Image (cartoon, helix red, strand yellow):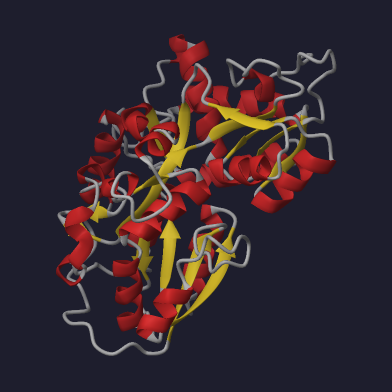
Length: 385
């Protein structure tokens, strides 16, 4: 995907000041008894939410490594937790992974110690959000799109555009969308606005929602300031968002397949779509803290994370696509080829994956607005400035 290759080249140029990196771990020994993971909601399940979804219990029994999970709701929260330390692994999206590498918070991975590495999707093995200068800083986990989730009783037909969450309007039930839609509580949502503008204002010349010059960036912020007038809540907790759809009258929002699947499992009138403008998305990588206190258990988990049955069941549970393509078809888990197709397996090249914006981009050195400004300006947008 051209956008990703450009960002990878840019990131490499930015981080060339780093010392040559080699993996700290050269052999795996006995487990240390535990492994601590910072993860997205729903990523590390032990059957507590739904008993059939459990890929922790057997791992613990076989390795003696007890799994501790700290749920993070945004990439910024993941970066902050890894900066604090005390964790072994993190399931980082592309808008966090390069920051973790640049901040020297994660260590190179010795893929020779990951026997199942050969099963990873070839499109992910050298992905620029976890590979720099041929050095791997993580093991691919899951990927998928950011979908438009909606109430099917309000929208008898699927919405064809993201405009239902960006612009004030009456919805098909005749009521205004004001106060009935949500937006993501993270600076990376600026990319969703840029993605929308790529389709509706081509004269801006946006070629990547993560590479915005000053004029393009201003247009995205203006769109988000308008959105602020109709948003009822900025969401970051998946379970709170689900409650808002069930009990607080929310009818449309950008979301993850995870929430869609859980709400549908409760027989609620919830559906999702990727509208005509396309979608941003996430490709998540299990990365290891530079000061991991349980490196043997960490490596054992990274290998376990690529197990076909785990990848298959997690794909069903989260509505995402496995990093191991065979998990769609080999029958060792719940997923099927049809299920992976439904989750967008064939849409990889259409998704613009989360990537950390940098000043030096394909538009030229210093031409693009860097991520620290995304952070401060989005706080201002949410605050009504």
